[in-house]
Amino acid sequence: MLGFINGFLRRRQRERLRVAEFSSYWLEILKTNVPLFNRLHSADQEELRWRVQVFLAEKQFEGCGGLTITDEMTVTIAGHACLLLLHRETDFYPELYSILVYPSSFLVPVKRDFDDAPGIVHEGVDVLCGEAWPTGAIVLSWDEVCQAFSDDRDGTNVTLHEFAHLLDMEGGEADGTPILQDHEHYREWAKVFETEFTHLRRARRRGRLTVLDEYGAEHPAEFFAVATEAFFENSSVMKQQHPALYGELKGYYQQDPIMWLSRSDPVK
Ligand SMILES: [Zn+2]
Image 1 (cartoon, protein in one colour):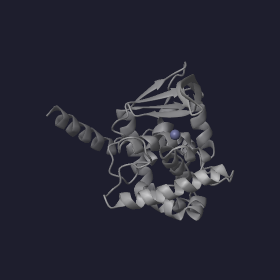
Image 2: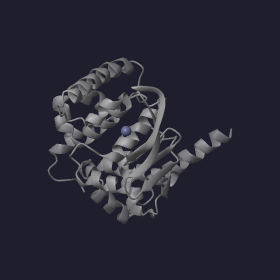
Image 3: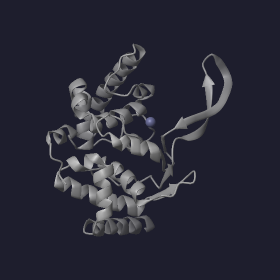
Image 4: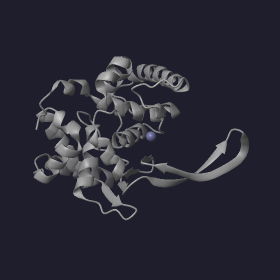
């Protein structure tokens, strides 16, 4: 019963935010720090502004490593996160509660088994610029977030990458398959993604560069996150080199970023 009431109140709050005023300062941040926002149709910009309002009302941000959280940080991160939700029936990353932001890359302790020494665990640290936890948190380096939006056509964007991981985890473990619209879609998705993942692994072994970052060859979950980055930030090359993969992502995200490129005059 309590869950039903909470769900009702949340839906009502979200609907109220549809007509709430969007601060002009926040709008400037979206235009400057989320360059893809400028290429959206005005109706999509409106939807994105609403989704950002909901996101900011429901999620917590926390500064780490001495960082003080500002509106620029929250609106920039929310803008990228919500770009992945446009046009879709979603519950705004329901498992996500906190976004932790470090000033720059951060260290994470790791333990690894090595194939050549079974049973021996090596302890060390990884230097990361972003991380998504299945327990409901995203960790980002603000430096890397800024680096990503400074070039919105280089095919890499840590914020899109980490939020794609969260979408993937909504379907269970991170395995490169998020929740798809209908059941029949899973077979085609698996076929396309397995083929493309195998091709990327082969390309990496042979030292051949593709539009997909070679980090995607690490694991199917990384492949989905890397493909999402290229889909939004390097759509024309992505569609040319990987039409089937582009088609699957277009169906999932309900968006066709290649259409945005034809607009020489950004929509303000
Ligand atoms: Zn990743």
